[in-house]
Length: 306
Image (tube, rainbow, N blue to C red):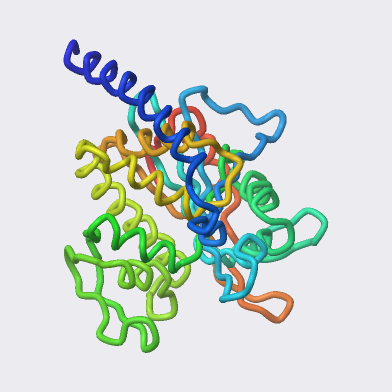
């Protein structure tokens, strides 16, 4: 126990010093180096009446389907994961949301949930997810897939465990074999986006996104104690990010991610049934299950069953 406390005290002291360095560095990043169209992190206001434990941070991660020249935060979301991190217990959970889930979008009637980003940006996406699961995110992080690819390459690639072989004629002709596989940036993107060749379609794709997140976390955690690793990562993100979050808060979020214990990560994908309405294929989500998952994970970022 003493070792754990000593380690936390050292991290706290290190954090205080590095926050000052990062804050100063943020002021001198040249404007020409800033590319705020690759990723956006927005701190959102929680919906009144939704109770969340004080130790838990909720981040909605959204992969934007924006094409070149399109606004990243006003396009449709291609990947939706609600991630909770418990900063006291170092536990974390991810609730996957099929992108074609048919839900009510305030002011726009029934629509696919990924269209909330198109209609109202990160705030509307946070609201749609809150209405479905009952948890309001503290942050929404939207990124383009090329940024995601570069990030995976920058950390040295990842490893995932693939339960079944699959391929895609456009994204990955040779396919992904069964078992533990190593992915660079492009392959991590393809692994996370392929849907049509998966037996479970949108549900299996969301599960693969969670496997990718586990791989990214494992890589970050394995390198987190290397001098400068997290600091360089935060500075790289800052140069590519549009945000209302300061460098000190960014560093604390990065530290929270790095300190999550792999054995304390739990995941689940919201189920449902595939159908059609308004001339399009959709997923009718299991709302009761979504609310049950939200209630189970809200206070401690832990799921005890899927």
